[in-house]
Image (cartoon, rainbow, N blue to C red; front, side, top):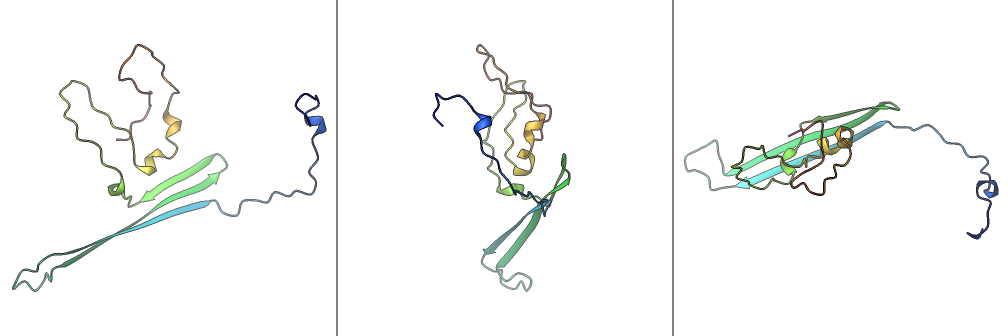
Length: 135
């Protein structure tokens, strides 16, 4: 249909025989596993330390749809050590320093607590207003 012609929805086709099934799974699991191995020189005469050291961590992020409008988000043994480190700042002012959230669990759905944009052409160092600061 050319753009100059009028018509629109009355000229659209019809879709017959389409069946939309129910969602089979309302559960999302995001597991993680992290391990660290280190080898150092063993202390002579120490039978409990042979020079090797192994550590392991495991955790899980869970998202479960309870109702169409209500979702449960949970984390078990979160791995916040893999998140980018904040820069070192020396704050000599009377105002508290705030850093942006980078942990994935707290970023999911963070838009619920924001109050839209804050526009000020003459203001400096102004960010958006948040009802909840998780750090």
